[in-house]
Structure formats: structure tokens, C-alpha cells
Length: 542
Image 1 (cartoon, rainbow, N blue to C red):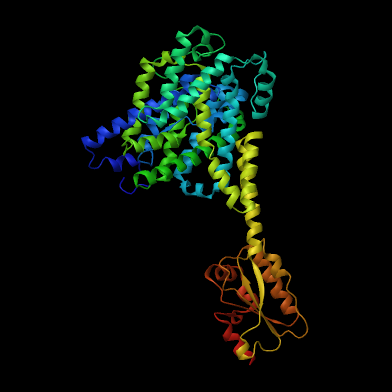
Image 2 (spheres, one colour):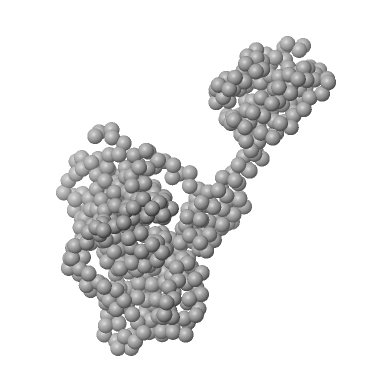
């Protein structure tokens, strides 16, 4: 297993592993578990599922991703990026649909790792990731306004899309609850102010405890403030096995493939981005393909035991590294600690007020919004990059992530090709004036840039007249040549032959030369008309 490309990082880190590092990993794992508990509950509620599902996810996926993953310190679990996607699937396809989609996504992730597709994530531009991340942040924020203000929707009103939620909130504004707002503001103040004075205990845990105590012991807050226990069933004990009786018919699988692809793509992007951040913190290099396989296995285990889609959580991963975690053992400890919480303390989660959950998710949305990056791109990047980011952002908010990423990638490709075609230039070369310029009847053109379908029209536009004896294309700046540009070259060569003009190429680089020879272009113009240097042919016209 020494050079196995899917080898988990755990096996590397256990070499020379001692009690000192074990102690650090245990401490880091416990701290991360404390951070993850309220977040897992909050993210489950934001995803439209039972609160315990978030903890099940952190336990099952968290353990398997650490055990099999390609990063030293990656912490996996439910994340804000999945909240709106999961909520949409649950609302339209039910929990069975979510389970099937996540199982399929797990298989896709495993295949991505096996076929070494981890490196392909780098082809997702920053403008797209910032755009959809900011868009998800807005959708999360909008989705929590209801609980933060204590609003009550009319019977049968169950909005799914962000704009529908805004409309429903406006229509329900008359049901606003002052006690709910006060609890929300107190929780928000704790989350913002507390970290300025104390960094060891997670502020979300303090907010949860304070919010629960206020609602429990002050009667005024009991009016108009819902708690988790009043809206949801809080189970305790081991996670349930949930794969029994699932409809895995071909028709059902095909219908859920788009959702599965969305989950897989987002899990891959977010987990590998988290790995990159972690690498800089612990001076290591992750194994992207092993990480993808681990994420796939983690997602399968998550939904098999009552959870939801999971991926690498950047904030929890950073907390792990900052608190001394240096091996996957810390992530496994975090999962075990959360399992113990499930067995002993989970019923107490029912005391947490919904406005406190909303406040926690407000902070999550703010932290993931990347507004500084958004602002920097708008200010300093080309307008095409800004356009891609804004379009991705808007489509994420208005529609969903699938539409946003697909449109962002298509728009990026179109704008890139447009930019590249503009960079490709055809310049007439007049020779060395000190040597008398070019011989009469010889025309030389310098191709600057790449010859591809977006720039082939520049070749097609060349013409000949009765005084021309020879046309030479200098291709020293062309590093790649595609089929469309090759076709344009062949047509130009045939036009030259019809006009009785000799057609030559010089300074041909390896990739274009390979294409020219494979296509038979060298036979079309004659191998004697392909030169390493232009001086070799100009000598013949002196």
C-alpha cells in the first residue's frame, strides 16, 4: 500500500505516532465536537430535516472521512452550502429522495476519486465559487428571518425558493413576536461580542445555553418563542439504519440523478477547498483523490444512518488545526464525542429556542458570504470575471445551485474563448529593413497566439493577388492547433495552390507539428515547404 494513490492520510500519520500527539488530537477533537454540536443541529433545521439528522451526519460522515480521507485535519459534517439544496430535495422528493440522491452522490464521488478526477476541481474558477457561496449565504439568511422574528406562516404555506420565502415573510409580518426577536438579538450579540473576550469556548454553545435558560425560566419569553422540542421530535440513542424499504427503481434513480450530481459536485468542491486551506495551516499536502473517495463513503454512511449530505467543513477544519490536531485521529475523536452526546445529552437540545438557531445561522451565512472577496473581484478584476460572479450569485439566489454553476461555467467558457480569440493576431512581417526587407512577391505573416476554432477566421481571411509568388506563415508563437484552425490552414493552402502561390510554414512548435503530420498537411504542402527558420526559405528568393 506504500504507493497506492488512494492511500488514506491516517496510515502516513501513524508512523512515529506518540502519546504527546494523541493527547493533542483528543483535545482538538473534543473542542471541535463542542463547536460542531450546535452547528450540526442548526444546519439540519436549515435543511428542513430533524435536528438529530445533523448530529448523525457529523458522527457517521465525520468518522469515515477522517478514517479514509486524504487530509491530516479535515473535519466533515453538515455544512451551510448544502442547506438550501437539501431543503429543496426534501420538499419535492421527500426524505427517501434525499437518501437515494445522496447514495448516488456518494458513488459518484468514489468514482471521481478512483478515476483521479480530484485535480479537475481546479478548473472551477474562483469567480464561480465566490458567486455561489455568496448566493448560498443569502438564501440561508433569508430562510432564517421567519424564526428570528417569530413569524407564523398561514396554513399550507411552505415556501421553498428564496423569493417565495421573502414573499411569505412579508405576508406573515403581522405575526411578528417581540420575545422571539429579543432572544434572537441577545443570541446574536453573544455570537458577535463574546469571541472578543474569550476564544476557548465556542460562542454558539454559550448562545444556546443562555437562550435555553432565558426561555425556560423567564415567563415572558415563553410566549411567542418556539423551541426545537416544540417543533421537532428529539430522539436519543444510536443513529437509526434508514436504508430499508428505499425505492431504488431505475425510474427513481434517473429522476434523482441531477440532484445527486449537484450534491457530488458541491461536496467535491467544498471538501477540496477545505483541504487546500488545511494544507497551509499544517504545512502538508493532501491527497485529493483519496479525499474524494472518503467523501463518497462518508456520504453513503451518513444517509445509511439517518444523516444528510456532508462535506469538509472549512471552519471546523481550521478549528481542529488551530487547537493542535495534526492527524485524522482528531476528526475520529470528534465523531466519537458527538456519538456520546447523542447517547446522553441529545434530549436537552429540545430546550434550544429557534431564534437562537436563526442567530447562529446568520453568523454562519455572514462568515461564508465571502463579501470581501466579492468586493475585491468587483473592484479589481476584469468586467468579464465580475459578470460571471454576479450571474452565478443571482442564479443561486433566484433558482438553484445547478442552474448557477452550469450557467457560470458556460459563461466563463464563452468569455474565455472570446478573450483568447482577441489575443490571437495575424501580423504582416516586413523583414529586416537593414537587409532590404522581403524579396518581391513574398508575403510573410506572424501568427501571435493560439490557433483554435475561435481564431480560425483570421486564417480564412487571407487572400492572394497576381504578384504573389510565396506566402509564409511564421508559427513560433503558436503552441496549440485544433481541428477547426487546421481546416482553415488546409483551405488556405489549397487556395494558394490554385493561385499558383507557394505556401510555407516556419518555426512550427511540437504540438502543431504533430497535428500537421497526423492530418497529412505536410504532404498537402510538401515537406520541403516546412522550415525551422524563415531565413532558410528567403535564401531561395534572393
